[in-house]
Length: 182
Image: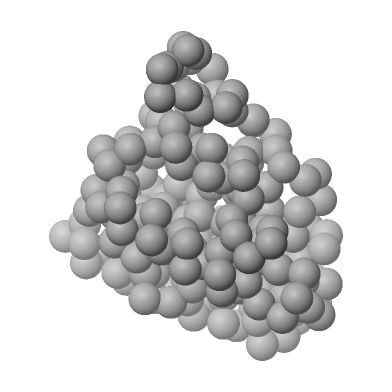
């Protein structure tokens, strides 16, 4: 199965991006192809319904990756009880043909306890794009974010309960995606 992850932060050291890198490792460890599209490293122009940009460069790369994906992971920091602007912009560049009938896992990293507002918003967007929301999501906050402050592999430190939850949610998401794909 081919899984596309969009890391939706415009911050170089974002814990939501570290979370994306970690789940990429977990999913690849289950034998799947995984592509991580990092909006910090590959920014997109502001979306305009007038289409005043061409569909080349990063936009073309993102759209092509989304077309080839069997399943999608969306990761965002939670800013003021919402998703990041760069992730919303990326989603605006995409359409139903990128999401229709695909399993989507939503993840967030919040400065407070958890980021449920951003996750609810992501699930609403996914429904409107005709994607299929995974019934579980991942939210890290508070002290849980400390483990994701630096990139590292599963072999480096335990990560505690949140790491086990991420692995369980990832397996559940992959099972859903496989059932949908048939």
